[in-house]
Image (cartoon, rainbow, N blue to C red; front, side, top):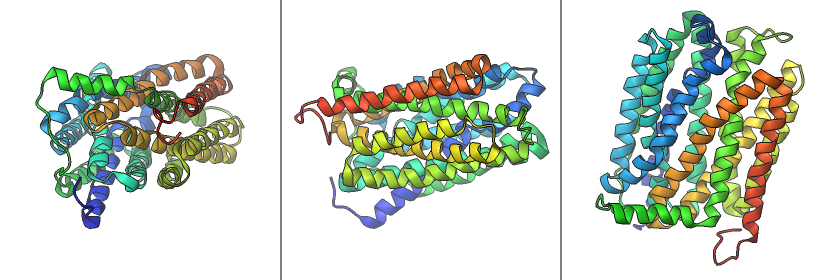
Length: 398
């Protein structure tokens, strides 16, 4: 690796933060207007949530192929092409008049977004690495929280006054500005050696990423943690609008300000993991996430908001540590594939978990859904704890 250039690292951090902001704003753009879409197209909450599950499913399916492709064509080129395509589709989305077509466009948009989501961690590990990786990954995850919060908040507020079309368009414009800055600022990679697009070495990297038992802990955290997270945000609008709360849509959108907690905790958790160890910080993040879920059981709007802040902060702390763990653990030849597998688990968990969690909410209400999500978090924590028993010659920072 070349000598560390602080100015270049700052530029990388800013560019990836903006890219993450655009990516998450586009990925979850329909979420704050799901109740409106359900009303317009005569849908139940679970069917309306397909607009979220479709994009995360496309991302999960495409993550490994695009992460592998980036090894051959270059990480920067893959990320830029992906975000540009996703932005074009985001600008087209408000003008689609039929729900099945909306779902199809969202599926393709998720495939495009995979080109950034699956490659960013590998790019950061290659270009920064070392002791700065935890902090750098924390800032990248902070960008995802800013995008998730800003996009949802903007879409919800504008959507309340201009309809779902206006809400989606406003988010696409915000993401467009970030996309342009991302393309301009992102430096070309210096430390990644492109591999020929041949099956044997690329599949060898995939086998290495799958064959390391330590990596299964962050994969499990990604799948189950994200399943719980996306479930809460998918159904939150429906719960707030229903009795006894009856919160207006524009006011309900303010709940997405809870994402600010994730912006703070993801950065702090990355630094804490560099200092005190990944597993300890990861387990603490999962415990805080479960605490937030329990707080949201109350039928009190202020308590729900506090619980949402705690839940969001805990989840993004755990996600920041888990994603940084993958980049640090994987070998250089398998880093792209390991990052892609993490994204596959993360967004596969979002897609499947969002459907299962939404069904649980429809059948058992918020309390039954909470029990299910707490079980998921407990399994994720158990997976991380088990890694402590792996011999030190195999495990990293256990």
